[in-house]
Amino acid sequence: MKIDIITVLPELLESSLMHSIIKRAQDKGLLQINLHQLRKWAINEYGQVDDYQYGGGAGMVLLCEPLAKAIEELSSVTTYDEIIYLTPDGEKLNQKTVNVLSLKKNLLLICGHYKGIDERIREHFVTKEISIGDYVLSGGELAAAVLTDAIGRLIPGVLNDETSALFDSFQDDLLAPPVYSRPEEYRGWKVPEVLMNGNHKLIEEWRQEQSSNRTKEKRPDLLNDL
Image (tube, rainbow, N blue to C red):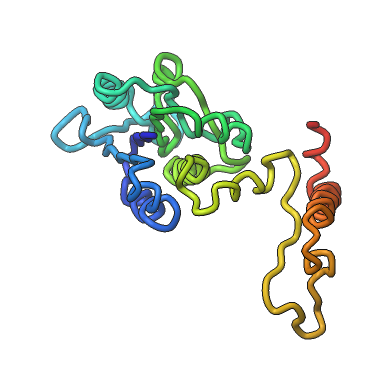
């Protein structure tokens, strides 16, 4: 998979996407991430990519021309399955969306900044808009990092245990069950006996019950969607 990211602050993404599982995915050649500095397509020699908004109001807007040129140049060498704009008013990100996107081959992410991007880019280029939550960030870079991480870990071969991602929270609209590790007893706090008896059928039933109970307690809204 290839993910291209257009941004005015590539430094914000470099650190988060060059470590841990996502770095491993890139090292294995399973995921290619390219950061593109929007100022490469600036409208003048000063690197300008933003300006005041028509009609007045506080905050700058990323200009139409640099974004259009960037998207068109990148699209001339790569056919994108989706051109995604990270924005607070987009579709709220969930595991189902991540699962679908992880099956794509090429994605282009656009990181907004300041007050956002010229609406004409959204109208004529963007195919999908995604929000990572009902709050506002300084820019789309952190949201792009979240989306890339969520997608990258699902690519076959990235995780050491191929089945690990299948049992994450939200994969079946339930939260993950409690997990335990050594020692068996600590300060009198014991690991549930069912996990120690080696009966995989009972263990699986216990985990399913715990997932259901935990979801009812912590995220009953997920059950309403079933």
